Image (tube, rainbow, N blue to C red; front, top):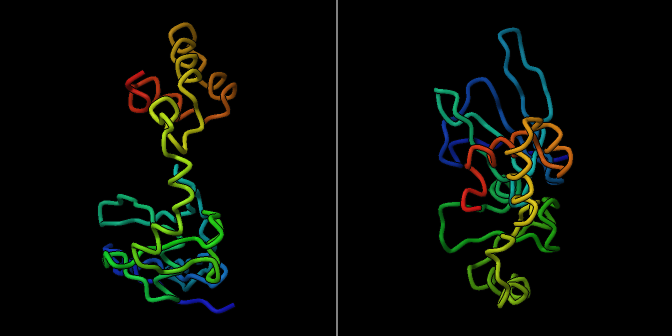
Length: 183
């Protein structure tokens, strides 16, 4: 399987002396962890963000702060010459599947082509009151109200998380007012 090395500097980050990143045409990302006694090859776990696009987490600075890089951006940068900082370039997933980041499904397009590609999606959103249930949320407004009521009565956060099929961290963020603070 052909793979290309990706430099973090292509994404405005500091290149790592301890890790080298590679992306393959099938959308998989590999990392070589460089140890004092040689190299060890491992696969990076790709995790979805809230918007559903797979990402990898990398250390962005010497303080150890982390940031996410979209896998589709890595594929497009390596094989299609995509430049994230070029405003005349946009990325699309041809089949609309955010998790399919194979080379044949990722395409670099102009902003006009991007708008035409997602035209049907934009039309579906017209006239819908999205304030009640913002897109890409696992929870509805009524579920959040129930969670907040449960948190007033109960201190068993893991049970609340299990009941609504969300993470314990998400329940804590709701409790602290970081998420869904207007409710």
